[in-house]
Length: 89
Image 1 (spheres, rainbow, N blue to C red):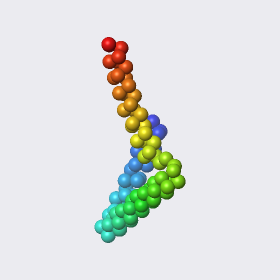
Image 2 (tube, rainbow, N blue to C red):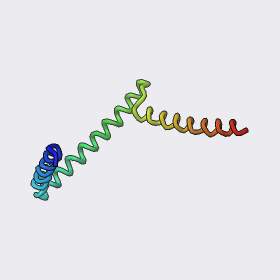
Image 3 (cartoon, rainbow, N blue to C red):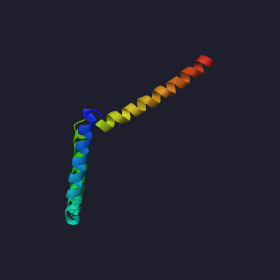
Image 4 (spheres, helix red, strand yellow):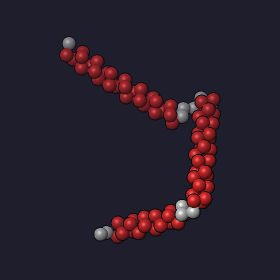
């Protein structure tokens, strides 16, 4: 077994034991879950606000680029099909 694999396995073992100790107390585990939920809600709110501000400033968001990419991909497929039909005719 290589050194990298050994180090990875050792680190995973340490982190697994640390997580077991961290979540051993039910009250602590519940509090951690609540904090994680709060962080996720905060991030969602920040993302939503960022999107609104970007649109108000007429800037494209990451989601806008993804939508455009999907549309472009769809158009490329349609062009390919039409090109094949024209070449057969």
